[in-house]
Image (cartoon, rainbow, N blue to C red; front, top):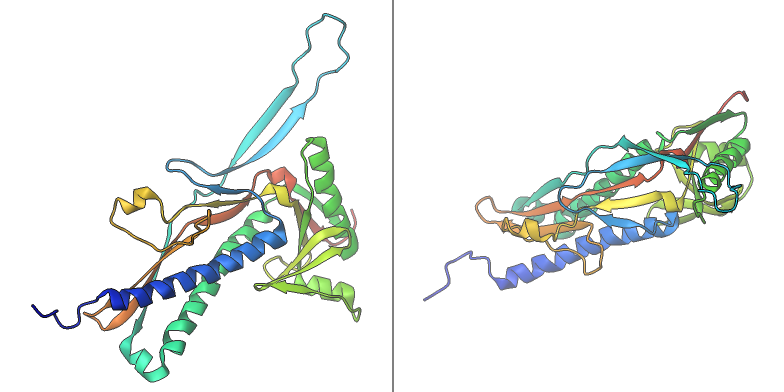
Length: 296
């Protein structure tokens, strides 16, 4: 028996799968680059039923001088959870009509809109991180950009030392205009990796990231060890129980799921994206938020 006209066969699906993989790989490259720049080493996969929270930790040590044979006193530790918005699945859908492809070509109608979608998805997660980072509790005001950067680094190092927590790379986030105002006509090498502009080993910061998402007059700093990538795996078996099959990366960390399909009823191609990811800090008192202004 002859195949019904306009049936979507494996010939069409193989091409869709190739575009799904391309979309995913480009998104993954962006995030791999960001993780490398920031030094993030702790991606955490969300399991069903868990909640997301940051913590503020303090400890009051008792005297370590204890008489021989006497009982060692307990040191009181307190960890206060700070509620953070629960991670949620983000669902996106894009459709490109056959007319758009006929008029502009697939390279523009499909590829360019994919590029725009990728940029928006990437930017949304970063925007949420920068907003969260500005809720850090190590605050202060210093008169110059250089002093603000220096004290932001000093405050987080001092805090982590007092908590006896290990740290290596302190990441500083500054407004792009603040940096260029400080530099004036001085020449400096700014590196760019997948859209992230940064400087290595500048003003005492192992990594300084430039962004317009941090307001002018504000410097934010935290150790890389304090930054956590929390995500929902789109390939989770629980989702497959609903009959939803998304293409994901072949890496151990699946940040995004993509499914492309043709809609013959409306003569257009649809792109479905599923993701759930957030950057947050484990300790709010491990983030310094310093204002550039009058020295108190």
